[in-house]
Image 1: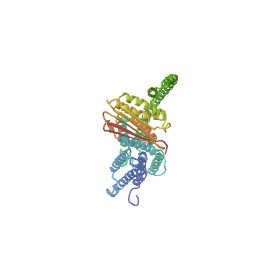
Image 2: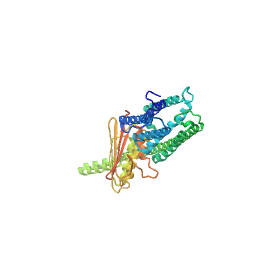
Image 3: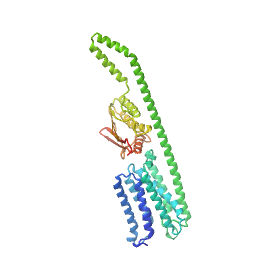
Image 4: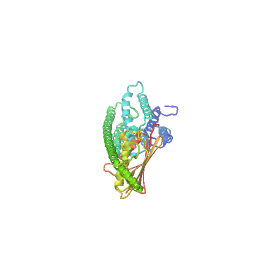
Length: 439
C-alpha cells in the first residue's frame, strides 16, 4: 500500500501503461487539431485514467473483481475514441490503425509475459518495467520517425476498411477473452501475469501468432499492390514521354518542310513587293503565320511530363467542345519522381476530362503558379452531376473504386503537400499545394 492507501499495483499500472500508452497513441496520430490541442486531448485521457485508478479505492472502498474487466473495456474505448478523434481521414481507417496499434501492444505483451518470469523477485514489477521500456521506446521511435510511412503503406485499400476493422476487432476480442478468463483464487491474467494456468497463457500466445501471420500476409499483399500501381504509373510515364518525343519529331519534320518551302514563299513575296502589292504581301504573310502556329506543338510549361499531360488533356477537352484555358508555370524540375509527376497531374487532368465528356458544353481551367518554395495548382472543370464525398474527398463512381484521388493524396503526403476538393454550382474544383523545397 502507498501513503494514499492505494494498492501499489494500481499505481504501477497507471505509470507503466496509461501514461506511455497515451503518449504512444499521440505519437501515432497525425495531430488533426495541431500539436497543442492534440496534446491537451491526450492529457485529458491520462487524467481520465488517473480517475479510473482512484475510483475503486476512494468510492468503492476496495477493488472488486468485476472492476478489472470493466476498467479494461473503458480503457480500450477511450483510447480508440481519442485516436479516431485526433487523426485525419476516414474514421474506419483510423479505427483500423487504432486496433492495429492495440493488437501490436497485446502481441508485445505476450512476449513480455514470458520474459517477466526471468526477473528475480516480484514478476509483476519485472513485467511493468519491461512494458514501460517497450512503450517508451515506441513513443521515441514514432516521434522521431513520422508515422506517414504507415499511412502510405495502406493508401490503396480504398473501401476495404470495414473488413479490416472487423478482422482486427475479432482478433482483439479473442485475445481479450483469453486474458479475462478467471484464474484459480479469483485472480486474472491482468493482475497476475505469471500464473500456472498455462492453457490460458499459451492460447493467448497462439492468437497473437495468428494475428501476426495474418497482418504479415495482409501487408505483403499491400506491398505487391503498391508495386503494381507504381509499375503502371511508370508505364504511363513512358507512354507520355514517347508521345512527347513523337510530337517533337513531328515538329522537327514540320520545321524541315517549312525551311524547304521557304524559298518559294520568299520568291512570291519578292514578286508581290516588286509589283508594289504591299497589301497582298502582308495578307499572304498573315495566312502563312497562322498556318505555322497551327502546326507548332503548344508549350504549356517547362516540365516535359506535365506539358505532355496538359497537351493531351487540352486536345481531349477541345474534342468534347469544351473551352480550354490553361496557364501553367510548372518548373522543369520538381521534387517528384517521374511516376509521381504522372500520378499527380495525370489523375487530376484525367478526372477533369472524364467529367467533361459527360457534359454537352463545359470548360476546363487550369492554373499553376510558383514561388521559390511552393507550387500552387488549381483545376476547375464542369460536371454534370456533383460527386458524393467520403469526408474531404469525392467518392469514385467506378466499379471497385478508383485509384485517382488516393494516388494523388499518396504523392502529396509523401512530399508534405496538401489537396482540397470542392463541388459547387456545376463545377468541380481541385486545389493543390506542393512544396518545392524540403523544410
